Each structure stands twice: as structure tokens, then as C-alpha cells.
Length: 177
Image (cartoon, rainbow, N blue to C red; front, side, top):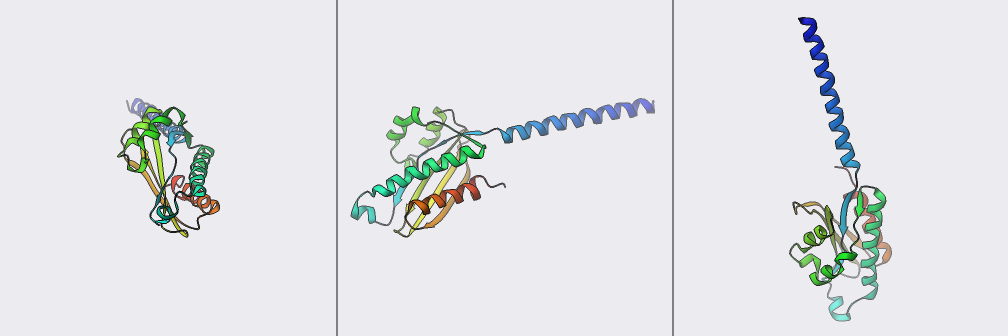
């Protein structure tokens, strides 16, 4: 009888160990699978009043495109994200106006594209020298923010804006823990 109990215990431990290994492998596979994300274009919030006095700065408009594309590129190259094509939602995005003030329309846009997550961002211009880059990554199903990240940059140049995005990706979006 005790030998039978030992054999049954050994079989139970073996099966439990296998189940644990399968669960661990499934968890690792889930972590390794890229998450689909809609990365919406950055928007400028000019609280410096420079824009009100001088009008739209074409260089800043181009920088918004530059950093939006850079963010998509860096996330795709990480292997942790699969970037969703925004083309089918161009009209919805245009109709929304400013995404950062649309009261959650980015969730519906991302959902319509089949994305699991959505990332939105703004560049806040305090002055020609002081700017902040802010972004939020949200879960499309729960609508909850998964990551909120910000970086303060100095200088209104392609180089400073790009450096800010690289820092945010490396130290906030892709950072473990």
C-alpha cells in the first residue's frame, strides 16, 4: 500500500510539474507575442503663445510627424509591439480633431483597427527652449492607462525631439517593471 502511495505521489508531482511547465511556457509565449498597437500622431499644445503671435511653425509640424514615425519604428523594432496601420481610420482621426481632447475617441479608433492598445501623445511647448513630450498607452478593452510617460527636453530642434522620444521608449515604454 505504501509503495502504491509513493508511486501515485510521484505521478502526481510529475503531472503537476508538467502542468506548471506548460503554464510557464504559455505565459512566456504571451509575453513574447507582440501586442498590436495603434500609435496616433503626436499633437502640439503651444502654451508659449508663440504660435498665437507668429502662426503655425512648419518645422514643428514636421517634427510631430518625425517623432510619431520614430516612435512607431522604435516600437516595431523592439519586437514587443506590432504597429497597426492607421490608413483605414484616417477619416475618423481627422473628424476627431484634437485627439488629446476628444474624450476617449482614440479607444474607438484603435478598436476599429483591431488594435489591443493605443498610444497618444502631445508635445507641450512652454517656450522655444522648454518643451515636454507626454504619451499615454491605453488598453483598448479596459480603457485603462497602462503607461503614462513624460520627458522634458531643451531646445526646439529635430535632434532634441528625437532624443526625447528615444529616451521615453528606452526608459518608459520598453523598461521592465
